[in-house]
Image (cartoon, rainbow, N blue to C red):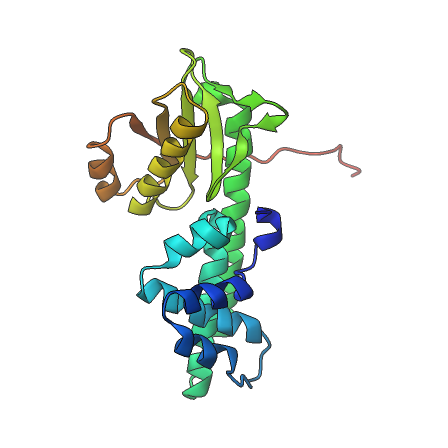
Length: 243
């Protein structure tokens, strides 16, 4: 499946998936909704309804694996939150409650900044893997790079090889090292062992804020380590003064 072509939550596949899992009545209601309000986003309202339905039935992970691999990426998670937020706004509209537009814009800008910073951090680390561990190098083979390495059901932030020749799966979490980061990492590690061999591979989660729950969970998993990063910003003069 072409992940680049499935950045938006895919409605057609979601309708079919819901019907296959005994939710035909709910699908008909969502598809036939008459959405009339002071904003657009009619498709996003439907997407939000379906995402909420899948979450309630614990089917979202299965849907992502089968039909929407992009959903497992940070930008895919942002798309899910966006659709849910628009769905909540529509519910508020129906009940006479208007959304706080300024708060919504602030949230969107914050998410955009977070993803931009995460991309910069990923690209910096990919070029400077020695900052993480001496002897670590980026995976390169058959024209494929270890940056945003595509696999079945997602993308690995950085796939590297250590000094002993073992694969190292590196996942970045800009805001919080949430518990689900570990489950995602373990799936990626399992995929690498099954498809690339030379296992068992190692895993690294890099985050600015590491939750105590995540640290406790990782302490019980062999081959996974946590790293905390610190960002330093500087401003330099770009040209000579004309004064």
